Image (cartoon, rainbow, N blue to C red; front, side, top):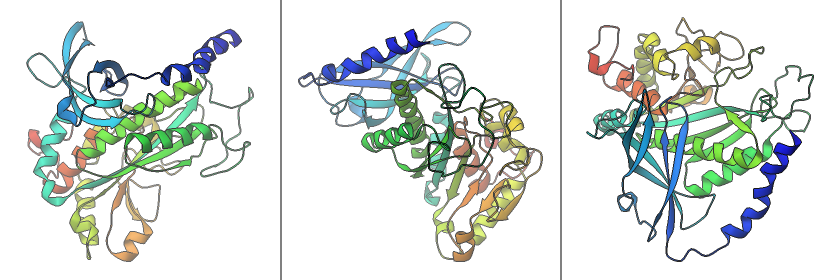
Length: 371
């Protein structure tokens, strides 16, 4: 293991020199896209002769898609960010994936989400997503934990080397997201000693999925530099009850306005009628991950039954205490798993809450299960 560590550290010591070399007017653009498994990210980089002024200045590119055979697909740039790893003028660009006939590939849930968000733009839907993740070493053990393991204790928002591991990673990820232009809202230690959370939002419409996926990409890249792995597994350690979610806050302009509580209550009523449909799209494995996660333990709700309350965290959907007192604001859907696709989650919320999908017999085009 020590030989592996030494070889990994070598390039980190010399990289700063090469990053300081001038590149003239040329610009490196790193294309980022979601892979065939619908939860991992891929990337590759090309040179442009000039710094792009906007997303339209970045050309489409090809890639190989390994889904039952190697085929060529198109990477279509959809949102551009600054590159915190190679610095200005270089860019990160999030891409949609299409086949040769411009049909979205299986992992491309963004394409359909864009259409739905266009239908509801008059409601001005805002989202905020709270991304939990757990750090592991290259030995596949929780980062920082001693060989005998760490007895369970709640350490959410804790301070101290005997309570939390990996704060440097959280800090560096936060700063990298700010530099890139990701709408990161905050961060905190979570209930396991090597578990953390960051929040992205508020974002309107399709922007939510774009910014969360790029924040995830940046997290994995930061972890490369620290030789650790960031896991979005919904139940990261099998023999412990701790889980990882991606709680999603949702509001419309009516909910955020005076008297908005009535609109939230109506939206939650609609959500209660489509509990099973939402769970099918709140993790990438059709609900299997949430089956392990939502056990009514440690601030989780039941997988089988919908529940809601004010100021309680072991429910499916929560209205925060301050929102209840003010009579307007947002509600929190606590069911999405850490490895959810934010395009599926936000699409399901607006379809159910704003477009009238209310039960099992809804039209297929309103079904929240991703195609």
